[in-house]
Length: 99
Image (cartoon, rainbow, N blue to C red):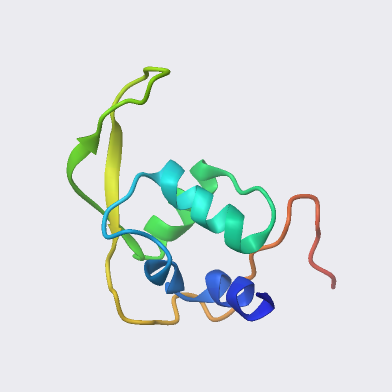
């Protein structure tokens, strides 16, 4: 699990855990389960889009029972393992880098 957590920080390995297409909320659930702590959907999207890991696809996911607007769909830009940021480190909320 520790290796998976580390790889989620600096690679696109999330493609192996997520369905072909997904909403950011669905992807967030995958990351939360793998990392063992909460992550912000907004920050997750921002980081992965900036790195070129995610891309928008046509269509939207229908709202759930609670309503709301339909969610945008995404996919991983590559389904091959790639290093996306060799110096990245996802950390639990409240933790600080030393140094």
